[in-house]
Image (cartoon, rainbow, N blue to C red; front, side, top):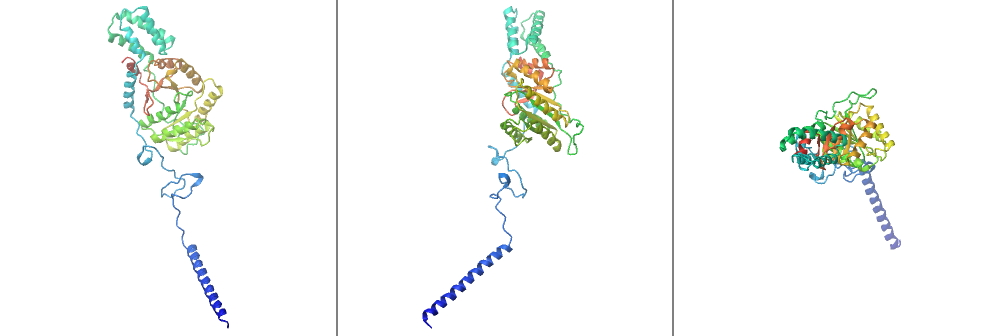
Length: 399
């Protein structure tokens, strides 16, 4: 046999044996992999449903939300804040109110001159009108002050102050019930109570720009400071920023916020969902924010009435609070009257009362609507909202 053929035959045998060896090795590897248990994917890189961020925990539960990122918190995780106590914030707000000056102090300065001329009385009258006391209230107060000035016939500042304090306190009316209705209501007929009884409901209303959404968040802090459990409803579905803002307030104080993921959703539906969620959780209070609306838009006011009617299907709404900007003066009065007709206002929240030159709106709004000012805001801080204290308010005006 030709030697060349022998060499080729040997090479062919080696190639065949090598191929068989490689095939067997790879097959054994695949069989071993198929029979074994695959290792779990890395949790930090595993995909999640609907684009959610991975939880980063080992709980194994699907849909676990990640910790809320909050600048300044330990490790970047938001911490729940403890709101300031009610007595503490009231004392601080009275001091701030007294330090900002007010119409009472201006009137007192004129009355203390003694032997008042007609020009002096006109100065007092102008001061009262500028403070938004209104013409009727100012006229009655001027008559009483003139009478008392003749009776006293004194320039003693303390005597004059006592007279003015009594008159202003009478106008502010400390006998009005300014407490929030927070008792758990009787469920409405047809409301399913199998998952819980309705919470006390507070509906917040007002025009644009009064700080209504911020006031909702601050009110939640007031309630938490009173050891109440709270749920907030973001029924302002026309502004995505409003729901985000309310959610931020909720995170800060540990309050759940019920909101719609769809902009322009039915606000009445969101309000009812919040009421139902509060019942399921056994919460004490549900606070529902609404979209700001102009008082001269009939359609928007009708929608507000619908929100209240839908909430009433669970239980009667205990409080309808109108948020008013104290600096709007008589325009604020017109707003209050229209909102009262639409949803039946039970109380007023006055914001931006830090400049007491317009403090007369407290008297005017109460006189016109027959409802009390229940809460006041004197600043932009998280705890710059407190129950209205008539005596503290008057004393601050005359400090």
